[in-house]
Length: 501
Image 1 (cartoon, rainbow, N blue to C red):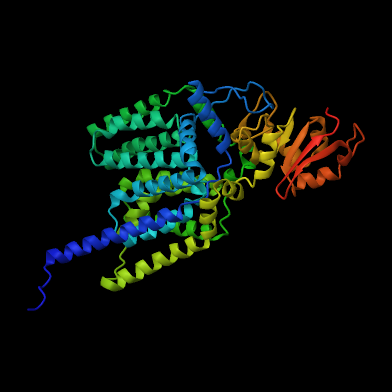
Image 2 (cartoon, rainbow, N blue to C red; image 1 turned 60 degrees about the horizontal axis):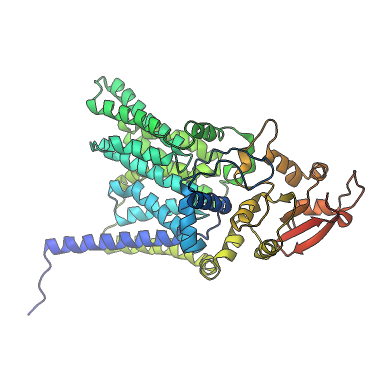
């Protein structure tokens, strides 16, 4: 007897299973690629703020971790994230936070492309774009910026549902923003995106010469309810004031993620290719319904070329459009040839990238704390153990990137500056400006005027080389005469003033 012939139904089912299998392979490869060693410089103070909330049952409003601006009241708009980090770290440590960042990134990607119904090879193309352009946000693991991207992706999903006539999205939007305003300051960008959609609906109606549909009034009401919902937070309107500090503040240019991206690298080429894909899609589609997406793409493109931090934001807000463009491309490679070609390219791209990072994965698994220091703030485990045994006394000068590390490890001293303080100011005094003058610009006279009791800086830093050759104009003492080396390794140098103040 011969083998039974396959029916059209069974062939279609086989193709469907292959599509699901290859799609699962794409998502698996992307997940593995997105696992970066946890390296958030701000981990420590987030952890301690979460610990304070859990143990004291109230939000920490005044600074207790630095001596620079005693009693400074800081609007911590990510206060709800802090206890989440505290619980996660206590249970899964740095390795788990790295994995949580990758899972969150994968969920962002899924939410952005799920409604377009792509084939596996189309998903693979977008996965390559996402892996390259989301790196700036996901590079340091599960951090507030990654949570902000997830909330932005949820907003996009709700906007699509609203367009599909799912009326429950009108009350879901205010709920989303109520949570968002307590998790991350990017809620302000989310309101702008929502407002653009509401306003563009009016413009589109005017261009078409039709009356506003009834659903628009519910949509507009949902927008105003969302604005009102953002005030349901412990700091009320102050979260807006804190968020608006990030517009045009010169102190931000001192933080690397707020600096302009370097598009001369491979990532820059991918960014240009992705932007051209979007432009091609908008041009060929020429749909009036794309107006809000065009406005959002233009605004976030400007933000993306202005700072590294906004490249992933541009990506997430435009990914649904890019998915639609990829879906409509007239690219046909049928049967086994298509499958073999696309799967081979996909496995090759992700395989090579993962293979090159094999050392990162091994370090992350074997020594999460060492991995944090190696890929994060370049900190020293040795000096941390020393400071825990012999806590510094008095007021010290600390390297900016290590402030959070000191706070998180529970060293019994207050730091000079850390990652919370880049926009802090009181009167005419700005800690970040003061730090920059001393550490970056090597104003050692200003350093000496502070009369620090101890110093903790990178061993081979430019500041340390300048300090070695410095002689105080007030005391007449050289660095060797004024300071004693209490601890030194290849990463950190800890100095203590010999005769106190």
